[in-house]
Amino acid sequence: MTPVLRAMQQLETWPDLSPCPTSCGTGRALRSARDEIVHFHSDRDVDLHLTAPAIQRLHYDFAGSSAIHLVPGSRWVTVHLDCGTDVDLLLGLVSVALKAHQIRPVRGDASAASCNFHRVTVLPRDAGG
Image (cartoon, rainbow, N blue to C red):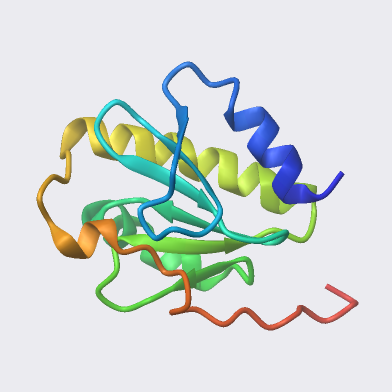
């Protein structure tokens, strides 16, 4: 089972998330009652709608991760899943995203609806790590 399938299966059991079509038109998505939260675009890449304040708060932590890719000005982060640790990272960040959307829901903001699909190129990691 690929890391994306593992993550998708786990997240589909969360009571705060439900399947929905992606607003970008590619892949599968999960949403909260208020917003789209996760887009599964490929066998390895997932876009996560974190909100600007959450990204700003975690920005320095993201710099140390080869799995996280940021697009300046985007409220989404791309998570590249290669292994179980990346899945665990995604699950933790989905929890952060759900909380961020409860505190500060994003509605009517065009930049919030645009995930990073086709805006991030993820290069394969070294085989060693």
